[in-house]
Image 1 (tube, rainbow over the protein chains, first blue to last red):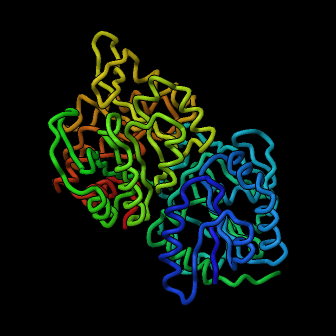
Image 2: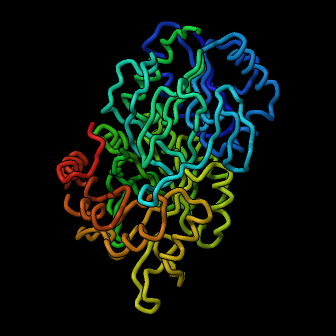
Amino acid sequence: MKIAIIDYRSGNLHSALKSFQVAASEFKNVSVKITSCHKEILAADRLVLPGVGSFSFCKSKLLENTDVYKALFELVIEKKKPFLGICVGMQLLATKGHEGQKNNTGLNWISGEVKKIGVKKSFKIPHMGWNSLHFNKFHPLFKGIHINDHFYFVHSYEFNVRSKEEVIATTNHGKKIVSGIAKDNIVGLQFHPEKSQIPGLKIIRNFIDWNPKMI
Amino acid sequence: MLKTRIIPCLDVKDGRVVKGTNFINLRDAGDPVEIAKIYNDEGADELCFLDISASQENRNTTYDIVKNTAEKCFMPLTVGGGVRQVSEVETLLNHGADKVSFNSAAVSNPKLISLAADKFGSQCIVVAIDAKFSVSINDWEVFTHGGTKSTGIKATEFAKTMEDNGAGEILLTSMDKDGVKDGYDLKLLKAITSIVSIPVIASGGAGKVEHFLDAVRYGGASALLAASVFHFNEITIAEVKEFLSKSNIPMRMT
């Protein structure tokens, strides 16, 4: 199995690569590669879209390369290969985002908008640090994960998902924030599994092991 | 619920972890990558690297240390010290840093913070403020260049400006308390945490577990940073977390 971590020069790829390599080493014949080459993306069996940066910056970096965008579309939407978006990589799945500049269009693979988190002043923004998950429904990505496990969050914007059916986990920070989404072969996480030590590695392992059932 | 973070800070000079008192008298405390790994195993919630030689010397040693640490620790890493350009943020992120901290350059060129935040997002831009109480301005005064240059700028006003410019977090070091171990500067902390809505990391003065609790309870800190007490094994991270947890401060217990 080939896992491609898409490089669109947003940083943070080092830790994503390392953690996927550690998780992949527990499987037979799983290789992990960072790439921005559309041919390598097309040859992959699983895709990871990481993301540090603003929505508009990441989006312009991702979409300014039309070959990469076409490869992503072919692999994820047509061939239905498993896809994981992390942090801004998850937010890019939205219809629109308002970080960096207003009304930026996203991939629109999961309907909704990415907006600044609005909470009382006693709750600090960015939502930064370790927080836990509430599971809306079972998803194979969260196999073996408990409500007492902690994951590392660092974000000021949240994904307001249109269909509640597509929300698999939420997290409390002055309000309910969407922390996990899923639709067919696409999953997204607001937190950073690659920074979340043992529970984070567990989720990465689950992603490698995941065979999405199409509805 | 979001947990209060415990952050060991590694002041790095010429590739070694050092620690002094009131910003001088540096003592050697070991190899940064080895120490990072120990803290990672002990349950640190984040790590902070400050390259205190960076303003004068070659940065490449730091890049290597960041890279080697990020390979060993799957935890958030903040790196700072002598960062002056947006391009350096990108280089540090690519070497495995999650957040980059600005200090002197944020004072001399506040626009740098907005440029960096626009490009990489506020969440990875930290402004480190070194402050010392000044009788003449009747406020805490911002110092730069490793605490050697006074600026005449009020820390409270500067913190607010940095938030407005897009900083995602403030690392607030009390120079009066740094290395003294008689507690964080609670008045300074309270003054800053009540003026900004971004998280503030308390730094300087931790000597016993009660000090960590006070910084959260009375100072409003979102995260607690310490260096020497952890490096010289006077307090362990586990002891701090256990004490805070028993005192009803939400902690990530590992």
